[in-house]
Image 1 (cartoon, rainbow over the protein chains, first blue to last red):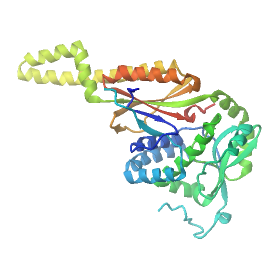
Image 2 (cartoon, chains in turn red, cyan):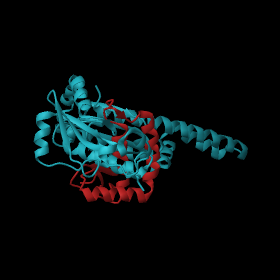
Image 3 (cartoon, each protein chain N blue to C red):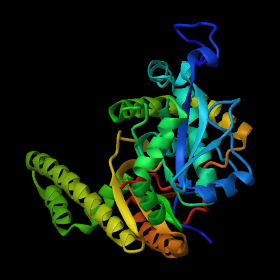
Image 4 (cartoon, rainbow over the protein chains, first blue to last red):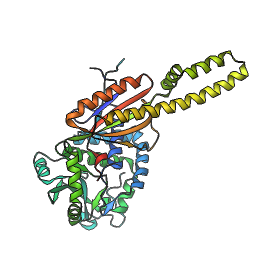
Length: 90
Length: 283
């Protein structure tokens, strides 16, 4: 069945494709920018996280960093989200 | 170099000198959490540690010990400027949260919540048990799905010119005008096209939000931190939806319908997930 989506990212059971940079950025966005903030003894300030994320966005766009992170993920067998190319609907 | 093996005060210090902290990933029902860890345990944020459950008031915090030589306030701030270090830790955080969220309802915490001792975590569970329990109940059986809206500007502008009677008329008039007039009219047409494109993107984003809201339990429009140009075009809007697992087919069908209708006019939709409910873990 063809899908009008260019990419559908679905968790687990899916092999990494070479377009995983996108899912990496999505994951960083979720983990660093979202999630309940509970004041711990050390909790990263929200303003700092914005800066870190924007910085990461640039860093992660470098293929080297992305590859390093992905190798790490594979090594650990992390069932992280990864994109699936759907057949083009045209 | 990640710098994780360095500390300023004690170059050769081990954890016993620098101390340990408790890194918290997520919170779930205590009984469910202890069942889940019997089935296996994902790798924590730092090697050499194991996941632990800290239990209070029927709730469990999923934690692991981290060296304060890296996770203390100052060293952490510095390590976070290292993109590779942070990205790897963020992936591990996500991995742990996903491991639990695939099996039970969890409150995912934001990256970097660290307590200096166990009793700090216990106290937090005691104090916030009402709020945390409420969130866990609300998220039960539900997942977060992300929707990104992109714009293919060339396609959108072409489409707008072809469907707007006013733009079509102006384009015709410009062709027949004198060179000087034609130039001015072209300028006007460009401005009008840009305005209509902006309006069309806003209208499409509202349509996507409204339609998907009707097949989900909650929704939030997220801010875009940075203009991202991807192979899909420019990111124009970003949403998160909380969707019942039992209703996912309806949600997906609605999203595919929208993608089909809007795709021809240069608006692209991307669906990501399922995510732990990071965007809906609020009181």
